[in-house]
Image (cartoon, rainbow, N blue to C red; front, top):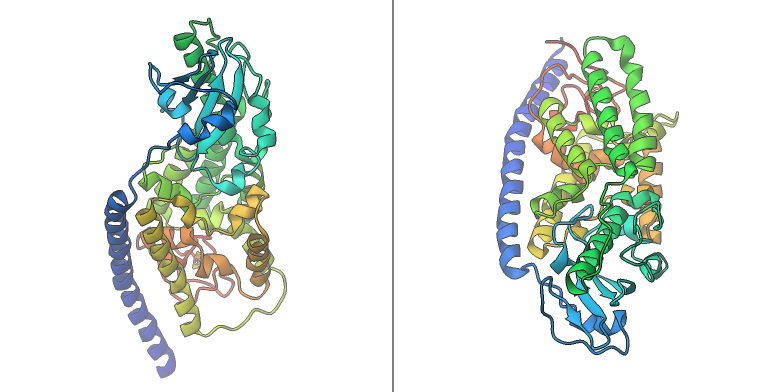
Length: 425
Ligand code: SF4
């Protein structure tokens, strides 16, 4: 080994040690930011109860209601129409990110005559059609004796399966409860789950377990490395375009804000990803993430890559950590998880976004032609979080064709565990 090579190796070792020290500082900083901002958020922006009174005229024009009262709480008019906030009646029913609060008007025969969404925390790109007047109009005229079920008498929305299931269930259960307890009507009691919801989490779990099995197999059998490409393709098609359920930093923000979901897939995604981080660092990024997969496939196109200096590359890689810390602070102080919605792939997999979002999607995909996995390396909040939580692991020395452009002896936070360079120690 020449003097120059020895000096380079020494510098890399020093960088390596500095990284672990910095990573510990980063982890502590993020934890402190989360705790302090959450405490500040609870005092500055406490959860406000939505006041439904200003909207009574919208759901029941020309109707004068008495004050709110009764059990469950409701407003009653002389003509016998009841109006109620569904959160007062069925607080436990939740969408993908907490309850969907509605103001409903019901006549004395048990027919829904008015409906308005008061508040929801679902990701806007996915539920843009669900909250539109066109979609909500389907519920008007439905009677408590009707099924009010997705795929039966209410349309499904493919990219918002969990949210529309929760919306229909909120309308169905709350209106039946009011009809029975306020009007003494006989109501149906055929409560059951939706088939597609069950299939969704099962498919996700099978995909996760298969990819994880191959991750372990490819650590000792290099012939099977191609299996990762297969897993990435399934990630794009199933997690991205079919389930529209990539792991999102919004999942984490909502989890910390106690905006839990009724959707089993939400728990499966969160717990499987965290388990994989503990066992295999950024496995999710390297084997399942649909946007990372698209970026990697585009990056494999035979175009010359930009030569970034080690310093530039290192500096830019830190941007994702800084962004995550800043956004986390904003989200927890304001208690508005949607402020954390800066993941470009949300527009892509929701098939909905504004012009700026689509331009960003196009840019973040096209740039991979010149810089491999640009989004994952420099900007992705999920990469920052999973990288920060990755435990030290030996055997990853990097290769010339590293999909993350890692140099020799990379930082484990930058390794997506593709196993191309893995050597048993
Ligand atoms: S360091 Fe090795 S295992 Fe990690 S992403 Fe690069 S080539 Fe794959």
